[in-house]
Length: 165
Image 1 (cartoon, rainbow, N blue to C red):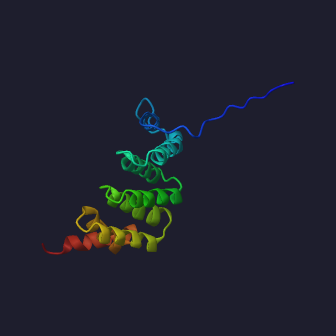
Image 2: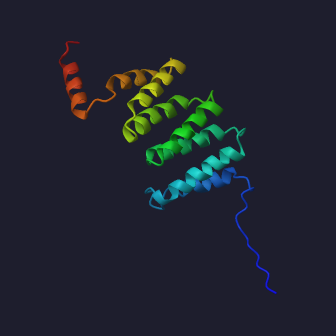
Image 3: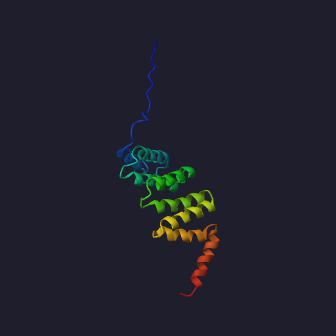
């Protein structure tokens, strides 16, 4: 009689700060160039850390790092949107929420998905919810530039330079 023993990863093991540090370190090669192969694992580790430790003092910051990495490396836009929405919902007082929302509006909705309505709505959310934040002013400007081609923007900036000061 043969007995087969299967050993697998224990999904019940909590992710800790050391796991986050290792995943973050793996994002860069020894020569400090980016390691794109490590991106999905880093995002998964960061989000699992937040899942396992939602009340940790650094949970919002770790989730924000996952957002930054996902958006900057153009990962799955829906996953990026979900992470930003989770950040804003679960950590409403986190000081980088306007940044995360601005990144989502600009780089996910506008540039990746070409969804100008959602970009506009997200910019408006920043304006409404964070009126004193510098990103609220940036959101106002971005709304006026939605849908403009690079040529349109150049013409607009050139015409502003011609105005007397």
